[in-house]
Image (cartoon, rainbow, N blue to C red; front, top):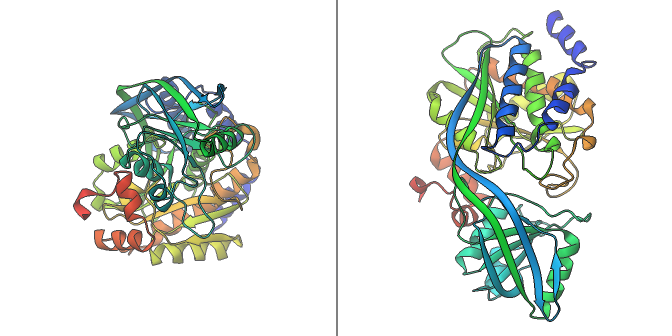
Length: 439
């Protein structure tokens, strides 16, 4: 390691800026995609890139469908009358439903096939059975809606009176209403479902044309190819979004400061993207804007900075796995590796079009989302030491990716094959995100 890089990394250990940046970000009210707070977040990211010494830092707008939350109500009407706290899930349509409660367990396809959900209000858990892959809420919702459910209730599996949120669709209104409830409420609802209880659910929300914003800038030499580093700056409107993805975009900005001090072998484009939580829309807009033949690889920082150890998702790329292993050895820091492709973060608009992808997350030691997507996703959950350390590791990873001349492109057949091997195809089709050209 050269002396200049070593000095920059040493300074990063005691840098207060990442915490200051996260503080300013989480002070912004409502960073939901398409809302004014998200625009302010994009401007803050661009300011952070300028501070790092990047060039051509800018904020760019793109069109999307903005969802705005209203009131939501859920009440059991028979055999008792009782109301419960609930929150609407993004892209839920407005409406009122009355029907029988039915408990679909984890909401897996097999469980939904075992119960009659037609015309009923389906209750499903946020978690999945041990030993199975993690099944996304959009898959559960898609299977329930296809089976004829009248409404969908997503119950948290973690205690704390924390109703979860999360989008039902990508960039468009869903077919039926959906809401989130706490574990404690979910326990009552499943008991009432066993008693063939009826309930009413009402959602007030609207979906309308809107505008979101990306921020990006450049570092390093002006080469023909570039490495793209992305992190989303939007968050759900019910919390500060400190963990998801305040930590991640803070790490991107902090890593940009380090990359500016490094001798890079290729151009690096750093980007904060909007609307990840409601459909990866900022990443999709950026993928449409760039010449993807010139993007050697995408590094997606979603989940980094939250917990002590870094986790790398290599999405089937052996070269990316070698890069991770080399940096882990260089830094003498553990970085766990997962090879499985998944489509639920900002690498996906690039990966499905052949760009090799690396996602950087954290090891929580727990299954599921934890505090994220709830009211409890707040700044007090963050340890600023993790922000600094992960910024260092990610800067080293990006530098190594920039040094790697040959990173094989991913064919549609190889990506689809990896997803099929991981049992994703059925769920992605239910969620309506399996690429049409792959069928």
